[in-house]
Image 1 (cartoon, rainbow, N blue to C red):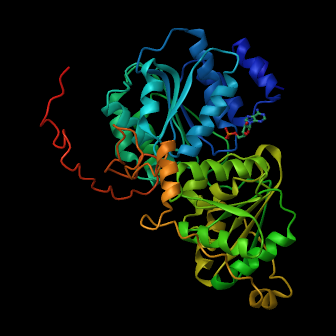
Image 2 (image 1 turned 90 degrees about the horizontal axis):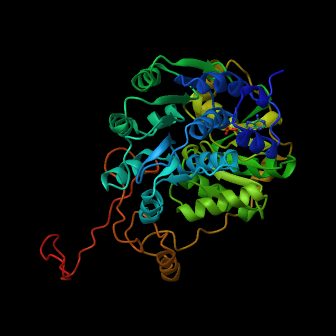
Image 3 (image 1 turned 60 degrees about the vertical axis):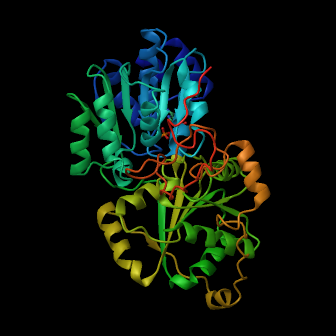
Length: 463
Ligand code: AMP
């Protein structure tokens, strides 16, 4: 049986793996690490949860340690692109863990947080940089970063990148990379257009695949219940009260839907938080931490926000609404049953969602087990507690001035709004989604009332 020691990785990496109690490589690690160590390009078909982060970062760290040299200022030796900030932060943390006995530096850059700290972090150069595409291009435009020293380039979750409209950003980034480099390309699915994108980046790659396209993880028990849309909340409350939940991710189609579910649960005295693109970075981080630490057992999420989140011990995934893209279903339920644990997925299917579920079952070649409605369901529907009222400070006009001030002081305000941002911070890019893949907000015009320098170039600073 192959163990990590058989790969011949640098001793400092093996130490870190022992510290993390990794004994046996996962299938993707078994296939990918030897070829990556030889310097080959790799096309990996694998989803989050398979151990792909270690599959690409261990041999890359090995390379960086085998050919040691300082990164040049405003450069990086390894660049990892991720579609979302959550995934970027997670990958960076894994790299830090695997490199904890080395002196390698790891930085992240993504939108929604002030850019100036990121500019400072990059000024000395970093070994491993994990970035979302939009913010990366912002930094390049501001001359805070160059890509000509990249030795290893990793594009993670390529299918998600395409879904989020990052294709133009990726093409621009591809042009800035040096021609001599090692390329790693990962995607959970490999339809034609993704294969086309892979061709643009990869040079004679080895392809490894750990699960056939769009097959659902075997360890997940899948159930479904037919229910009217307006009765789903009562069903959710019943399921949450009945099931023995360690941690559950609840998926809704829309951000407002996610907030509504949280308010209804709060009405029934059930603690939950929502994570989606309308939340500030601080709120998202807070919700994820609360979920990770077990402070809350229920996290309500939209697909984009939840993509790539790796929280161990998710016992249940509840599809409050059914995705209309089968692959999305596979991604959702892949949040549970991680690292060998068993998981359960429960889908609430409204009449108009039945065709979506049929598509899902056709593509995944699995059939979920029917889960009947609770016996006293009509009573539960009638007695469903009222939702807690939404807080009044959600809109920009009615925002709590004190909180706005605090956010401004903390420099984390709504990063796209200008308030409280350090000078030089810019709004989202026009092209594609915002830097972090969240929907764009309109930039507010902030007139510079008659101050010196109101018109750029009008007054030249001297001295
Ligand atoms: P990933 O697919 O990279 O997001 O990894 C999924 C989870 O599996 C992470 O929590 C990793 O820490 C964990 N993991 C990765 N490789 C191994 C391994 N060989 N043994 C045990 N756990 C692992």
